[in-house]
Each structure stands twice: as structure tokens, then as C-alpha cells.
Length: 120
Image (cartoon, rainbow, N blue to C red):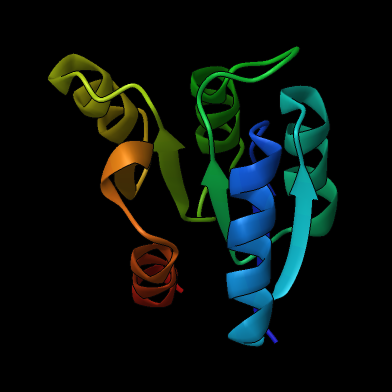
């Protein structure tokens, strides 16, 4: 069973994604805090991370930078899910090492599942 970590502080959206992933038989870990999310990446070694950018304690860009700098976890694919939809934000996220960037207002839970399956 593939393990997905969701680091998202929008509780409604997080629960929606969790339900959809569990329905697709993924093991799901979750947190709404950037610092705890980074710790979970290091200790749990998920198969993929869904990462918000605006988070308490450590933001998503910092998490992405730290993960990609650590050879033990740098190969874990990270998909950004964010309200920040400006082209410079998208470029920054992809340049920082994210495999994909989803703008919250433009995707459905089904689209997330498609992206998760593509990258694991």
C-alpha cells in the first residue's frame, strides 16, 4: 500500500483529499503544520507528499528546499497544492523541486488522485 502525506492547513480540503485517497486504497498521513510535516517526511518516508505553501511554522517552499537538499529523502515526489496561482509562484515551486503544481481553485479531488497515481 502506497503512503501519501498531506501537509495542508485547510481542514475541509484536507479531509476531502484524505477520504478520496483512502477510497483509492492509499495509506494516508496528514498534518496541518509545516514543521510537523517536515518531520513526518523524514521519519515516515512517504511515497508522495501533497504540500500546501502557506503553513504554520515552516512554509511549503522551505519544506521543499530542505527535502530536496537531503539525499535520503530528495527522491520523494512532492505535488504543491496552493491558492497561490501566479506564474512566478508556480515557476518557483517547480524550480524548487516539486513534480507538479495544482491551484486549489482549479482542481477536483479526482484530479488529485490522477496526479498522485502518475507520480508514484
